[in-house]
Length: 195
Image 1: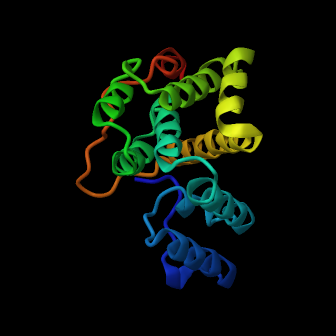
Image 2: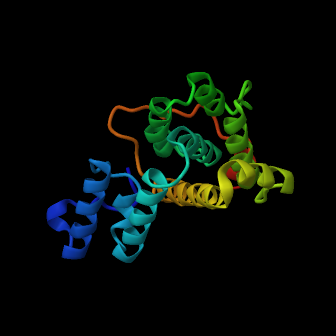
């Protein structure tokens, strides 16, 4: 059960309802995902919704590369909801099933294409070391351009916010869905045990 109450549309203020309607329009559905707790502060929900719409649908990044970065984030933070939503989108966008499964199982994927390797290594480095080595940054910039690398960092940052929101508020998976991630990610097992 989520730590923040769900707001039914009829319970929302006019501002909350306007943002709710924008989310449904841009995404095609309301999932009681990260925006359910965010709607309790519309001044947070509205810019987050707009940033999410941009990084998800309007960057120069190929959809498969965006979704690859998103599932790396979801796995890094053991975010079941984010993984549940985006692993299936990643597959539809063309991310190979064996790559998705390797990430799900905390394994370094093998047989990455050039672009996949760049995105995977960039996201992994930023999320694990909080930095990107100069040679890797340069390779991604050379491949995606300055705008593309800026968009990639924004995408990773945005989905980190979403993972934190989902995890902190304990937003549950849809009814009947089992947690899809089999074990804590390598970076989280020790931290989680410290409580």
